[in-house]
Image (cartoon, rainbow, N blue to C red; front, side):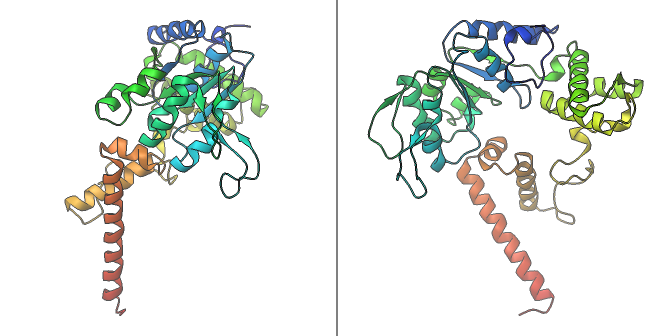
Length: 345
């Protein structure tokens, strides 16, 4: 198989498909190749969009477990009430709507790899639930007392700094030891300037093939912009930006006007951002209103994920919930005051 610069590639990617000219990525790949030669659990750390899932799958495809399944589980996507069923499965009649026996992720990953994406976003309850399964390979389906075993290699990933979370008592130290025989750090795209031209070319070729177009490359203005951009969304943003640019291009060369980056738009509303606009509501200089506005901003940034928002704000989940209730009450008082000013009783 030919070696190439891998960005957002297919599920059959192996580590032989990765090549890099940048030292941080070369170090990452060296660790990944070591991981593929062992059966130890390890943790992949990197910013969102850097390709942690792709790397985990490539390690699985390059390991002795390649014939087994690769099962991915996004730990940030589910509430505590769904974790038991999703990870460990359930028996028929275990809860309302449980009409059949269902295997969980641990059971499905037997003789293969279980990938716990965004593992640091698990709640304290979720962390305690998976600790025994990871430590001993034992679990019970929801609604069953039968102890089951699984031979699943556990790989994990997070965009947080795990040791900081342990220090702040937001992640269990004993769980970190179990999932982290060693760490693989995936560098952000801005730390890979030598790789960027090949990554862009690869994405243009892939997007062109998918869309049935023939795109030769970028004009000078587009190249200046794409290679001068800092790519906060990393490979994920690069892939989407190139796909959109190819779709907007009628000729054979992508122009600057076809490039729309994440920072150009407010992803929540689709409207252009006013970078000079104050964060507090217009006409208000009160600290409470500024705090409330900042909480709303962070919630938009985390797409409504309260657990992540609390982490980004540096507060506990309970503190965030209290602030949200305060914001709700404040909004109701403002609404009532507006009704009274309008002559309503």
